[in-house]
Image (cartoon, rainbow over all chains, first blue to last red; front, side, top):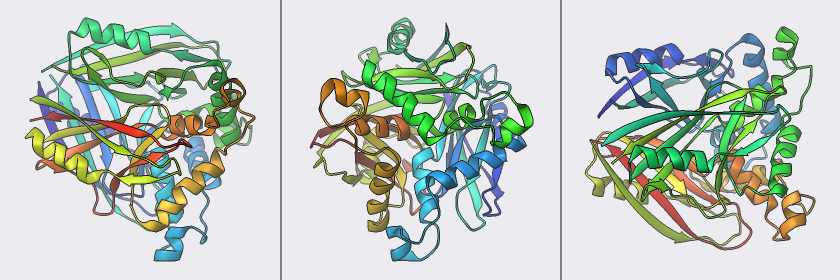
Length: 139
Length: 139
Length: 139
């Protein structure tokens, strides 16, 4: 049994962009040498989202649109009235969907579906350099 | 410390069916021999959901209904216009709620509430054979 | 590699209260002696929520309000018509957001953002004594 931890970084535009981060995660699992276990993926910060999706242009449009419909930008949020930084909805969207996911590892790589990718969604309204913590546990 | 991994399979109807999978998970934990730790449960594929609920007929009706209200079927999704397979909402529902959960293990079984079951929800519109990956880690 | 498990307890009012539980979790990680790995946090029961948020008074108002807007209290839920306990929406809110989260551990503490706290939300309509299971795995 071993634990292996690595952080990777990328830049977002702050325009509701989605990043397919499956390849970066698999590269870390390969470096870990772990063949069987789990892999935890975490966005440091309170306005990012991590989940799985079939990563294709249609859903890349649909996911931001449905999130904005469920929790729309508004200056009526208490967070806005205190901080005036325009991202009350960003915080709420991140809390609702979640900033992390755990995935099974088999044969030294993610055991997801063929049309199931791990993605990061920038819920904030300004660009960020995002640090993603990947922790692999197993043997 | 050890890791134990097993996959179990069942069939869904594609009519928003929910399955209580608590017994299958506890059986795998028993076979693992692990007494204390965590258990990760993952739906392979991008149109299934796993979470916990009080599994009773009322909520079995309510959960699908509220999901369909929040993210309704529609042919206006980008996914629909590209692929015409009628399940754009299914993908979005799965991404929102999530395809996985982690649960504590104590005394060789799940440490959930008496009225808290682990369930799978078929968000897709057609039947699937679902493969659920269960990974137990602990000692 | 080791696993360390502890439960902590607190009381909620049943009036949609949020608790910042970050300090309790870090205290358990410190007692575990584990420096690198993951920490799993789980609410026993089907009407509690755990996630991360920037814990400040604005969002403490906003999060309950948006949840009540997305899944409002109603006596039309099947759960209500069977059990008449007024908390059908509480169950659905917990299932949607989730009763658990996994977080990275680095240098013997949570590796979250400065403005990213772990919180518990009481989705139920009556007070509860809540048992939160914390499991730390790593080395």
